[in-house]
Structure formats: C-alpha cells, structure tokens
Length: 238
Image (tube, rainbow, N blue to C red; front, side, top):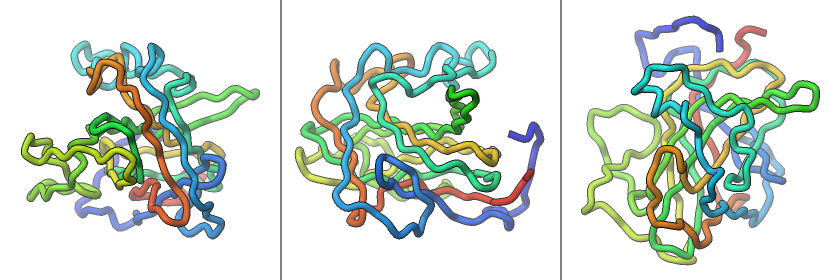
C-alpha cells in the first residue's frame, strides 16, 4: 500500500474504471480481453484439512483483541487450496471497492461453501511472500442473487434468508458470485495477483458439514465467465 488515506465525493471515483481478470491456461489470471482462452478447463477444490485456515491473527479475530492483522507469509501454500496467478504487473495497479469473483462450479453435493482470497505475491531470492488483500465466502445453497435495495456494491447481493436457500443440483454446472470485502490498495509493479480458493477456514468458520467432502469443481474457458472483476486505476507510483 501507500500508507496514506484517500477520499472521494463520487462513486465510483472518476480516475478508476472497471477491469479484471479471467481464469486462463495453466491456472493463470489473464487480463480481460485476452484472446487465447482455453476450452473446457477445470480444477478440483480440495476437501478441508487441518491446514486450511487463516491463522489466529486473521482479520476476524483481531477485531476482538485489536492486534495487527497478520496472515501467514506462505498463506495458501497448503494442500487445501487451488490458485490462479497473474503475470507480473507491468504497472502499479490501484484496486478500490468491492471486487467480485464470478465462477462456474459443479459439485456432487447439495450444499457446501467456497472461500475466495485476493492476494498480492512478491518473489525475492526465489521465495514467495503473500499479502492478503481481501476475502469473501459463500454458502452454496445461498448463491441465488437477491436485490438489496439501498446497499451499493459490485455484483449481486445475497439475502442469506432461509426461504431463499436453494440446493445445488449434483453434477450440474452453475454460476456463483462472491463479493470480497471492500479495500483500497496499491499492488506494486512487478508483483503478481493471485486468486486463492478453498472450501473453508478451520480457524474461523464452522464447516457446512463435518467433513465438507465430495467434489467441488471450478470450470473456466471460452464457454464460461469465470474470473475477477474490480475497480482499478493504472500507473500510480511508478
């Protein structure tokens, strides 16, 4: 980041525009508009295990003790995650507001959960350091979009009311959207952005079921819109 406050009298800010990334070949993130989109790509999101968690100093627990938020520097490196990583940024990139993760998924269960993390990755002396920028989660049975009136946000809202719940159809591909927590950060030139997906966070959230087992598959390529949309501004702090 820049270690400075910013403010705006209009939303979205005039110097930002909507942009993003699509899931690409070899589990990459490619800027919108890239032409070499693969066909029929998929990846399994692993079942929960003892390493799938954000630690004791995540953004949720530190609200109680008011300590610094500190995620593990190798967050997402364990076996419970699937990654999609961009090329090194050619220019510094400001990301502001609520990013939206849109995915086509299928599962052999009627319910489950999906957690999404947007992180910045730096590499020095061959070792990666991960900085968690934002995150969001969704119970799959609550995926149905609902209008939320006065709440201004990117993408669809979810009411999380019992009467709006809808079981997944096993084996059927469906779109889901996860709105990440609002941020305003600067990803530096040369770093990479990474979308990390998991099926839970053992350190903070109770699982939908005891094991959260079964298959959960992410689909992407020419026939899907799986990707990440956000408000950005290029060219700051070169």
